Amino acid sequence: MALADYNKKRDFNVTAEPPGRVGSTATGRSFVIQKHAASRLHYDFRLELDGVLKSWSVPKGPSFDPSVKRLAVEVEDHPIDYGDFEGIIPAGQYGGGTVLLWDRGTWAPVGDAAKSLAAGELKFELQGEKLQGRFVLVKIKERPGRRGGQRLGPEDRSWLLIKERDAHVRPETQWSVTEAMPNSVATGREMAAIAAASDRVWHSNRDRPDPSALEGARAAALPAKKVVPASTPRR
Image (cartoon, rainbow, N blue to C red; front, side):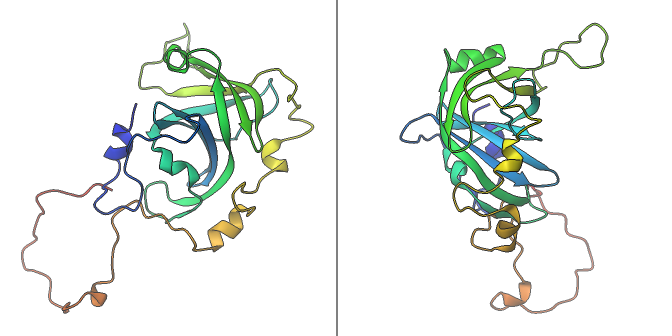
């Protein structure tokens, strides 16, 4: 997916987000999970690979229980710089909501990561501040509830995030990592504290300044004829 989709959704003449450029951390194998209260709360699970952050949206977040299979919807790759963001994306803008840096660390693939992703089954080990041990991302091969097991097309991006059995396993009925450890690994804040703060606000759409604040601006009647712009800026 590279960064084409990421760049397509953003106009970098007017956005403060980092442009979609290939980069790298010191290890080349960082991972980050951002708890994101957008239209619905979810967890953005990101793995650094080939200079970008491969990304999935996990509605219920990760689990240490191998019997719990979490839906993980693949989304556009993100630039490496996106991985340390915690703050507010204003309402009405792309991805609007509160972002909390829920976990971070390094990861190690089991086998060839690129080939495993292409095959639809990526096994890996996490060394994070909250998550540790072996996990697997498995692409869903059939549509649930459809007769004949209809295959998914390339546009379908539904995966499952599953904990593999190792020394870190814990039953979800006894302990949930998302409930027991809800706060930021960067600042220790909870979602409400970040939402109430204004230390980092990330504008991802065109700013709309107050016209009265512009030098030389004057009130005027609307034009008699509607003017249609040559092109419409992306939202």
